[in-house]
Length: 180
Image (cartoon, rainbow, N blue to C red; front, side, top):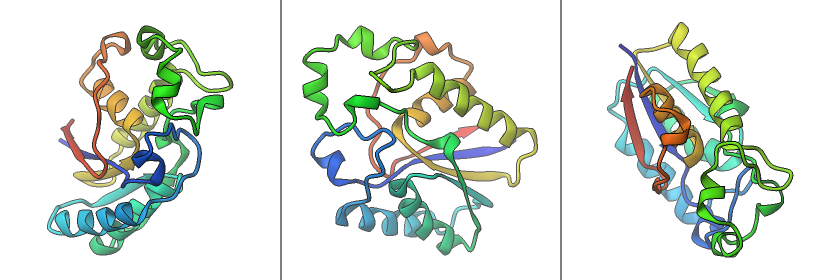
């Protein structure tokens, strides 16, 4: 059995302003940097033997204190990136939702202009997880990533259909643990 700890990055200014980030490389806010340090303290006694991070700065800056605290090499991958929201990145979520029906937002095959679909994120997250779990580098692995890959990755591991996934908020620096 392998234990995966999906960790959402710390807070950014765009999180606080409710702006859509996606692939935009927004850094952690001062609060987010503190959250990253607190996360490292909180997980200091965990049996995590490997740590992977999205290549976006907000995830990397959340993962680094944990990797340092645990004395682990930090592995970086684009596979754990948030969904590319294309032309809607940087806009406030209420601005986008005012003209976008929720059914369209949740449609796994719809993309924001110049962005990617949820199914695209599902496929790259699933491919990463399949490769990782084919030969796990440790019994417990931390994956520092974003809300979308957490929702989709957990659902994939639980063998849910992408169409059945319900949207729910995932708090900054929350840890979602799945045994596989």
